[in-house]
Image 1: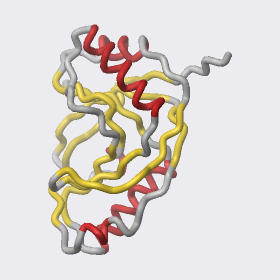
Image 2: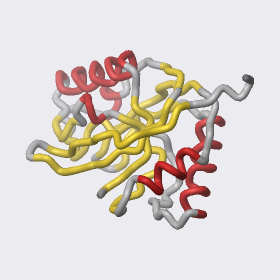
Image 3: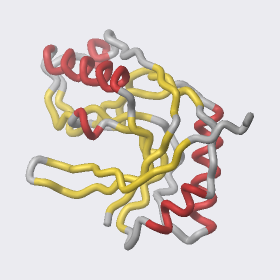
Image 4: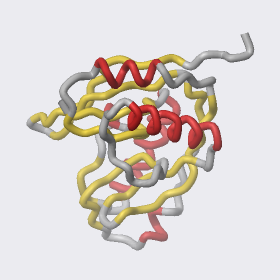
Length: 174
């Protein structure tokens, strides 16, 4: 079972991201566009792992208060184009605690430095310059109230992401 821990987006963020994808298609960007239902922010990529339960237990052990995230900027890693998330101390601290708890429970994860981004297009081919992609910055902000454990399976038309459960934010002021 291929697993990752992610933030799933509310409709206004999804609309902003899919609108940007549409603009990119209109100016001639080609590639494998992430389907609307697959747009997410990965916090920890676990990869092949036998069971969801130990991961869900770790997620339960790492509480978090609700926090806001905001779309910020466009960039690329080689031929992968993405939208970034504004620097956010609460998000960074949560991811650090989550990853430390995964490691303490011997659950392997990709140890690359956390760089919050949403992949929009893979294997990108541009018929325009990068400056044209940057002209239409997406807008959006949301309050993160839950985090999901996702499975990833290959379907006939690409990857299919399914939530296996998750955790809700807790208001620590209660």
